[in-house]
Image (tube, rainbow, N blue to C red; front, top):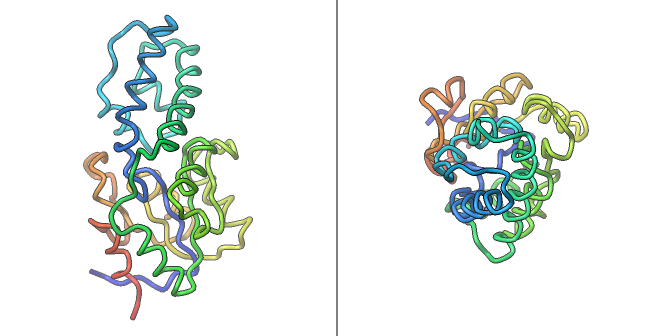
Length: 223
């Protein structure tokens, strides 16, 4: 595997990169649609969860257009509220797992003096809640979400993070094309994560390196 220049900072996506999202979303997805039907906001069958998992990385407004294209704006708005509520409830119950080796790998990166950040298109309370509940929040210098800053793309979110924290260079690590674009357009080396199984063909095209387990990240560091 090709090694990359030692990064000043590493910016991580959350879902499908650090957090094994399907271990949380299977229950949440079912609950969201049961509630929408009980409130008469949506009468169709529950869409396949693969549709939701395949939309991760997109902005929430775009996710519901893809998952529930026949849903009304009111249904989409309510789904946003329910998604966050049920995600936080299930997290608090201990549901949801980090990928194997995440904590140990992050500790090793910090041990090399590398600054760590999260940038996610998710909602603020969720993006900050996962690291908190999983006991790794203190490892990250900043945790940025599209929900908090109202950014229209991952490119803008990463640019904002880099400006505020004075990050001049480093790595962008994620599993979606939006992460690749955010890294390349902000002058970062891009590490594509090919282990979540949600991505489309060619999703990680343009990455400087692709890893198939999270701990492989350490093998990209120079000696």
